[in-house]
Length: 442
Image (spheres, rainbow, N blue to C red):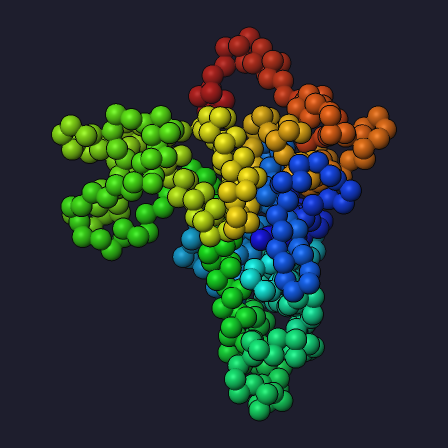
């Protein structure tokens, strides 16, 4: 369960962006939206969902991009560029795209995450110097790295490394560690690599492979970050399957029927020529298969592609983070999915985080104030700021109360993160001058 994520000097977020998934203090409404995870005598609370609002180009997607890039850095274990991308997020492999482009001097980029899983509360922080925007040849360096387990600092790394409460993780340490503790620490201090994470290299090999494997498994399986929802597609289990086969998933088809598809089935056709499996509409009468993108609506194809991700999150208790999760899907279907994350059926503490332009969720009867997030970009500095509806006071002229009409007040500009857009003068000028798009590009 994700409790907190921070990023600093990441694209439009020059200052620290603190994305909290813990309930705001003194907010008592919709208690069923709060998840609980117990470790020993402590109970940690998290939110079922977070819905991010803001105008186009405000920086909403940059929050998801930051999570995606940080996840990739942790999994690959270094801050070097990579040509092999796991998502359409080009910043994963070209880290020179990360620093804010207005910086005149290099400023470190910082990531921080706090989550609970099993019997561990994990806090991991990373501060890296990537130079200026687009500086591909800059000598990169990890400036700070720290790991905390169950509120105990395990190590902190700057240009050297210090170890602290190793006794607190005694049962997770490598069997022979205590016999070679001094040697392991000496080797670690003398072999720090400026571009490699100590977590996934030295700490994993010489201190605790169990803890590192635990953390990496959470990032890989429980932190599902989809940078572009239109690119989400689950078919990895079919990649090595014999060609010429058709696979129909009963669960997905049952969901498709509820979504409104009854005349045909949906399944994956594995071509004989070795190409990737393709989602197709399978007609019941004659078994003819047509690529779904040529027969079904875009919204239907999107739903079928993201449904397995939703199911995985609920079954395994994962954090599902998705850009434009709701695009092209009917509000009734979306509302039902969000309600499931807020319901007792969500027994594994799954969480749903997404950005949107759909105002239907600005409703006090659906989500809590601390689940409604905003991103606003300053027109002069071009920097993004992130805040929650629960950050507003409950009294005064700009106060936010439970009984308020969130949707109405949002469009009135009371919460910010909304922009007046008026194309009238532009079109009037273009029409008057008899201009066209082609003319403008000559």
